[in-house]
Amino acid sequence: MIDDTPLSSREQRILAAVRAVPAGQVASYAAIARRAGVPGRARWVARVLARSEDPGLPWHRIVRADGRIAFPADSEGFLLQCQRLRAEGVTIRRGRVCQPFAEDDLDALLWGDA
DNA sequence: AGTATGACTCATC
DNA sequence: AGATGAGCCATAC
Image (cartoon, rainbow, N blue to C red; front, side):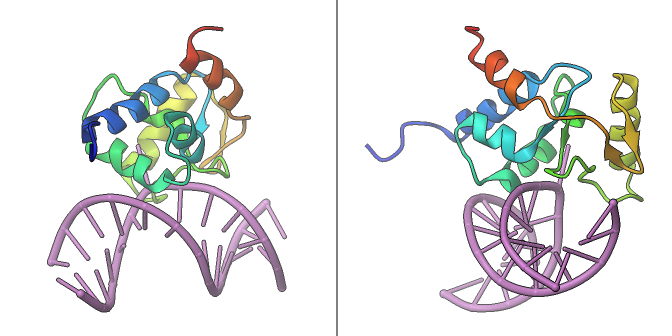
C-alpha cells in the first residue's frame, strides 16, 4: 500500500480543525497543523486556506504564532481578517491579536468527545 | 532538476 | 517589543 489516503483528506482535516475554532477566538497555523496531524507544516496549512474557497471556513480566525495577521498590512485580506475578527469580539492592536489562542479548546472541540 | 517564493516558526540580537 | 537570520515544506517557473 503506497498511500490510501487521498490528498483532499489531509486538506479536509485542516478545514475541520479551522472550523473547530469557536468565534471570538483565534488559533495559529502551527496549532491547526498539529491538531490536523501534520505538525511542522504550518506553511502548508496557509496554502490550503488560500486554495480553499469555502465561504463557511473561518480562515480569519487563523493567525500567526505571534498572534499577528499573516497578510501584508497593505493587503485586502489583512483588513478583511482584522475587521472580521473585531466583529467577533476579538481585540486587535496594530494588526495584532490581543488575546490568547484557543488551542486547548480546540483540542476538546476537535475530539468532540469532551 | 535547480532556483525562487510564500497567509510559517523559532532562536537570537 | 521589534528586527534579523536560518530552517522547513510545497508549489511555480
